[in-house]
Length: 124
Image (cartoon, rainbow, N blue to C red):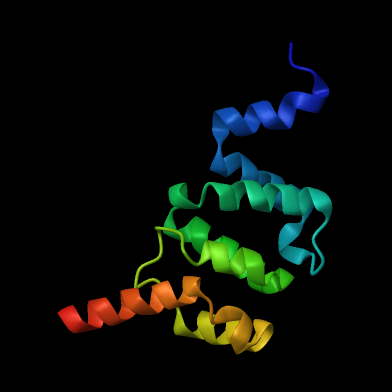
């Protein structure tokens, strides 16, 4: 038997990323402009698994960071391995600059993305 307080931790350990997205959906994260502590907990769990997110999952997380206006989480999610030059939407980056201001987004994380873009352009 699993204690009620440990169910989510056990399920996340077994099911991983899909379970965390399910929890965010149940908590109504996509409709909450101000995330609850529970929403933030599950979002942070997903961010901590950023290297394992597929493209659709990474985009969902990126959209969530913009909706919540969470610049720090945005800077972490943008570095997910799932993103490539073809998958990064320039409208999304433009929207991020409007929400967070250029100075906030102009970090080494976004600079790394820019270097990826420049490298790919040079190879074409």
